[in-house]
View (cartoon, rainbow, N blue to C red):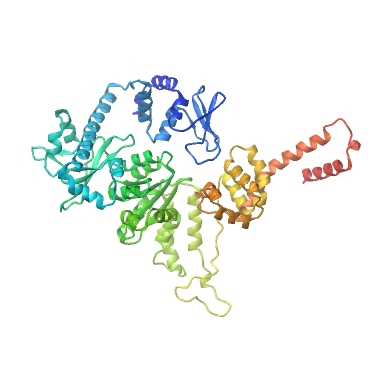
Length: 578
């Protein structure tokens, strides 16, 4: 619908919005001359590199490159689409968006439906407090939920009487309730869809109710039922708990994707507010696209039974076509017989967070699952592994991750040393035995310049001085500069001390523990150091030339140079020729 908003209106709206006031209402800004500075809301940083230029109407982060105008900021910060972002800013400026007539009617229809659904949500909430809902309140209490969580997720109760909602609604809301399927008129008379159920409102990114889920309190055959799809509810595009997660954590950096409403709410009750649930039996590409619009790091959490593994496999297969560099997907398989609700209550929040932090990356999950039941000492089984894995990798777009996974497949499938004659005369290993010396094919890892230099620092912290100088001249190396600054400030000169400091220094761990988060395969030490030296070479050459110019640029002759300066000149000239 963005094309139906006149460009002239968009430009006028941007002129009217005070960018500093808008951004300042969401994060803390500090005045810096005519501009404002802050810690960037779009990436984790300690030193402010986020700049707001109200006179120019844009913001820019020198750390992560985030850049845009007021509409861009609202879209990124609030997770809204273009039209919703324009609506939000227009409301703030006291303007009405001038849609054309057909679009206006469509928007009005959607508002009518969400108005009716918001009324239903309030009705169910009020019903939960009534005397006849004592059984529903006892159920929620038994599940360990307190009043604040019940209110945060707007849980409610649908009375057992068949027309309670319909009768409570005003005349103008009854038709929209029927249109959304919240009230059914299938048999010629209205009847509430949800009866004697705990109610879970499903809200969109703006907090408007678009559908419901209901959990029976009786012996109904269907334990859970959901609203049917409507003009405002498309099951594959909505994410349960996303609105609440964004309200609880303004800067979401990852989402934990679970299977049910109660899993989301139980985790929130224990302080884990970044859990959400897709709607339907499987995580499809529409759901994944909706999730990846919010964050670039997803952790899928499934029960550890056969159904859970099938659901995880389906999510992995659907994700492959979307896997661009920079996306990070992990899989957390729970012990069999457990779900997030039961496990977090049994183990506690800290133990559950440790499970989330240790979740399996997509690449490892794929190879683990596809190699199940295969003895890779046998050529036939290596061929079977390739037959399973290759079609999956072919679905991925070209990327560093895909190339690295392709090399891993070739490494696992290309080993033939088990079948070569051994020095002791034996031709083959023992059945099922893996050869200890499995040759590894080097993986051609392509990283950003900033990431490669950080790997070089990890391998050789003694390079910190040179890389600090390089990063100060190149704004595209914020991580290198921060890492080098800390290494020098800590007086670290060897890898052993560096690894110990990163492991034991709490402040350093919190600051740098995500430094290599999105790198599936670390390059070899020699490769990382060679790349770093190649990047520093132009810098050294420029420094040499500057010093040569300084020595030779004066009005005196070479004879006037001191002995030390002559030796330096000879050394610089020799390096220049080399």
